[in-house]
Image (cartoon, rainbow, N blue to C red; front, side, top):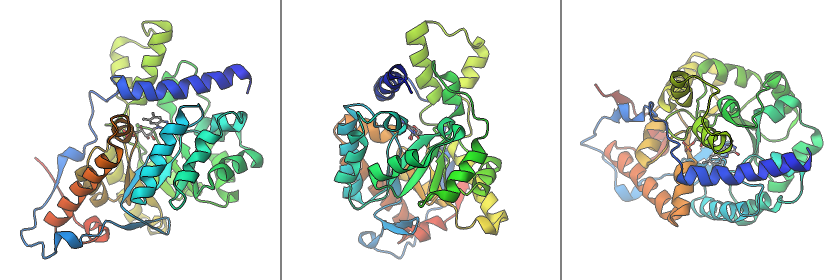
Length: 357
Ligand SMILES: Cc1cc2nc3c(=O)[nH]c(=O)nc-3n(C[C@H](O)[C@H](O)[C@H](O)COP(=O)(O)O)c2cc1C
């Protein structure tokens, strides 16, 4: 990578945070679908609210609550502060954390500290490295894999699938050929589990099948209904080039809202797991538009092991309300557990949801 490409990545990661905080980037024609479901009220909970236990396990490790801080940032100077705060919150709640794409750190050592800082402030929780599908498709060297894992003392590698984002990105890389073959090589040789996530367009049952067959252990659906990365990149595109003439007006609206809603991904992948007992150990993360503890609770009842959030967490951090927001979400979750008579996360995951009329 030359200096110009590296500078573009730094600027892009910086502008992503700014646009996610202040831009109009929500899906406007689609929701997560979680609002279509509700739990049946249990008038006889037979549990004491103060005994409710939010702890659960993820990839064999006990964690404080079924929530993860989604991959966001790193690779420019101010990212160190963001990652430090996210790491402090992850450590406080004993929940897993993903860092943003480490492509920049592979090419240039300038901002590696902005990634490494998370391990310093979150010494005891699971931390995940992150790289994009186009880099996997090109093939990663052993040295590159080691840099990512060692910088964080990572518990796993997250690979993000972001075809729609790359399509809209002014400087996007739309070469996804050979991805699955290269992914299989990596899952077979690295010493930690590989998780694959989307970034807001969701993962279907058929994509999940191919990912599991390629050796992936965790699928984070990152479905539609929260942040639209097409919209984030469209803002960057129009800032650079003015009006977007790449697509017709009606297609543009549809493409900006492209994707499978989060609840639909969970339903489809849960059904897939039931039909394929050999997939039973695969863990599922619900993300894309998670905004409260009721969203987390419904996600678990739809088959997720954890829920995860990016933009909601980033906004809370910006408003200096990070820990308070997470605490509120966890209290929402406790409320649902009380009203469904679920003393543990395992019990909540067995509750069925009613589809509202
Ligand atoms: C500022 C920001 C930067 C992001 N950068 C990355 C990234 O580098 N790698 C990645 O896998 N996902 C990245 N994401 C996507 C999120 O991890 C998540 O999948 C997506 O935003 C949908 O979740 P949400 O609706 O809770 O925001 C980023 C999200 C935000 C808000």
